[in-house]
Length: 167
Length: 167
DNA sequence: CTAATAGTTGACTAAATCACTCGGGTATGG
DNA sequence: CCATACCCGAGTGATTTAGTCAACTATTAG
Ligand code: FES
Ligand code: FES
Image (cartoon, rainbow over all chains, first blue to last red; front, side):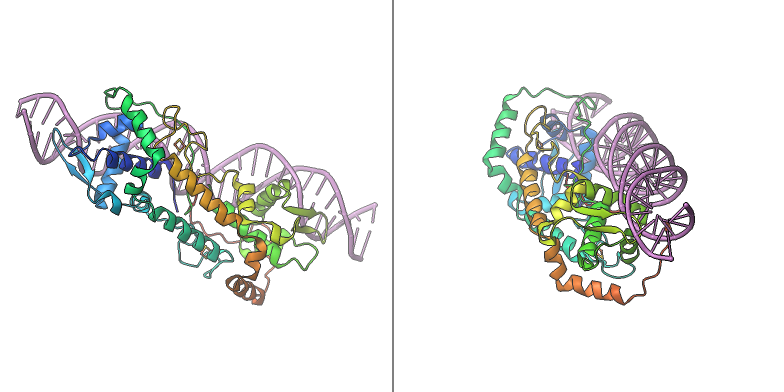
């Protein structure tokens, strides 16, 4: 699997979207401001999410994004895969050919690991997350803060470069 | 967690070592030849494994490496962590500060994922792997092949660049 | 003694990827 | 028509990956 900040941002943004579902649509600028993600970057992510049919968009003033499916039908695995493509921890990508043309000593191990990770992430939907007390707490904290109208390209970013993949 | 080819090679090499334990020591050159890994690269990996106390070395002719502990006491997680340091899938690295100075919406999720992965990899030891029929099969196949004396720096490498991390 | 073996160390590199940014589009409601 | 918001592609610097290379040092067989 590949699990980078890109995928994490996507899940965070989708969760924000799920939380604010009561509006018809949510503008990316709002998500950007609430979650501290660059707008341009979000646009990139949502383009992929839309192509995969996970979100729907409405253009023009008052427009924005909404979930294309009920929150209970969108799993974290789907989001991560929409962004990062594969979710496979083997070296061969399932081809069983990374040692010469044959299966290597540890293929079985990584293959099983991939399955576990996928099962875990696929078992958690946006609906699950929304009801988590830990999530609700953060949502409340964010609601209290004055929503500063962040203009395009002026959002602070952490510059940490950490990854988390399991190709 | 971080799970790159580096970590995968390390596990493969350690497993090879466990399989050939009946010799006093195993030379890296043998492992390199059997598993198709560059010798110089293996040296780098085993330096770390030795510092972590997972393998012991004997220098000079007839020397090589051996497991520093019984195979049943070396888990895959230990090997991966010896090579890649952390095994954490969060963005904050456990600091809970990746949104401003506070916990982000999805911290809980990545944190739980990290735990699952760690538990899985820590539950599998070299001893477990050695007895796997899938592994035995590969070992037999490798034993049949004539052990070509591969000189330093002449081993073929695949140039695939795939990752698998979960920082 | 000496040559061959094998581990030890550190610096160095090309290529790939990541995490964005920038600059312009295009639809749409008021 | 104009402000809003989505749409899209190209480009970039920093970082990491997956190695290589060269020069040791320890040990032992002969
Ligand atoms: S053959 Fe699939 S990981 Fe090696
Ligand atoms: S605060 Fe830990 S992952 Fe965001």
